[in-house]
Amino acid sequence: MTAHPDLPLSRLTASGIAAYEDFLRLRIENPEEIAPSHLLDSAEHSEVIGPSVGITIREFDTRRELGEYLFERLARIDQPELDRGLWAWLSLFYFDQLARQARTIGQSYRWIPKSSGGYGWLSFHHFMLGPYQVVRQYQGRLDDVMILLYGPIGGVPGLTTMITKNIEFATNPDILKVATLLYLTSRNGRWSAKPKSGSISQPGSMKAFVTYLRQIDLTWDLSLIGEDQLLSMLPPAFTRWKPSHRQMELGIS
Image (cartoon, rainbow, N blue to C red; front, side, top):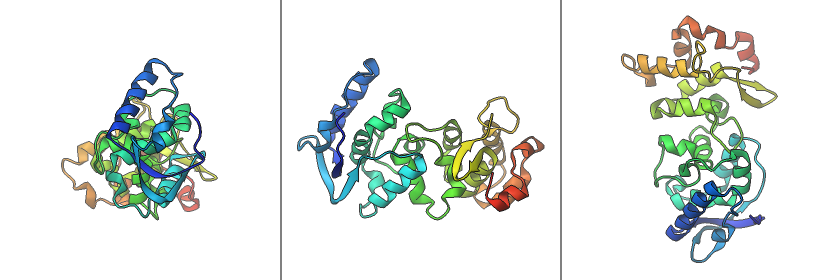
């Protein structure tokens, strides 16, 4: 795919989305299939929606960095999260980096949103829309929700997948902060998952945390439970995952 150094923000039309979907199916069968970059500025397959908003090819280290860039670029666009063609266009624009990291095409909803809608489980798994929505929702407290933003842009980490399967958990800032404290570690601003935190059999792992939340959700209103109360309620199996008071003071998980 030939890199476009700069293009005005656009959306794929219905025909553009259809052509992109055809390419994704072909790419699954033939990993050497070249991405249809001509769709990005084709009069037939795309339309400009932000003539004064330039989108530039660049490398993103993390999903957070991508989300912050898109949040800044889309600031003047009305309800961009509802525009399916926009997110398809963006994933095609950055296809080379995404494909290099993702390695496989996988499900099409990672590239093209299933529908034009707001929050939903699948929206978190779109390479571009997911990070954007998290940054937009949690401006000013992104460190607290890094469970949704850590990792490279060409994939959704396993811990993120586990917590976002329940939309109520995925949009509860206190639950997200507790999950971030328990299962991520931060060194010099670099966030990563703690060893075995995504294990199915490990006591107190993310899977156990989600199971515990489902259990207490039957008798508690989770929207009224703050981060400190939730941490104090966790059974002993979760103790080993909690950061020390000193680590929390220093901002190190």
